[in-house]
Length: 97
Image 1 (cartoon, rainbow, N blue to C red):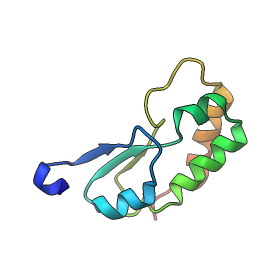
Image 2 (spheres, helix red, strand yellow):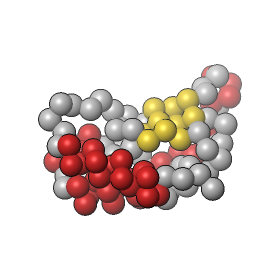
Image 3 (cartoon, rainbow, N blue to C red):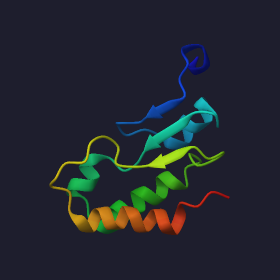
Image 4 (tube, rainbow, N blue to C red):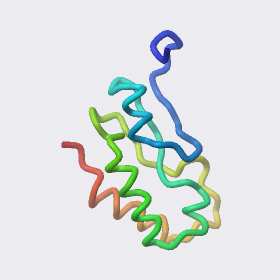
């Protein structure tokens, strides 16, 4: 259906199964997504790292065209340590093969 509608990119915005989304949309659709805002605001750096890792290893990166970002809008109250954890996880696990 996304081809009929002319969808070329998809911003998750809410908690989703990123791997399932990739399988359903295919490799030609760019997907934006990442840890949920509530996780970034209230989680620990370790929890943010693990959530980011689970997203990156879900299959969403298959074929490329994935942009890691917060799952909606980033509020100013997000602890810097949580953003650093998301960034570090991307460096550690976000390479395309």
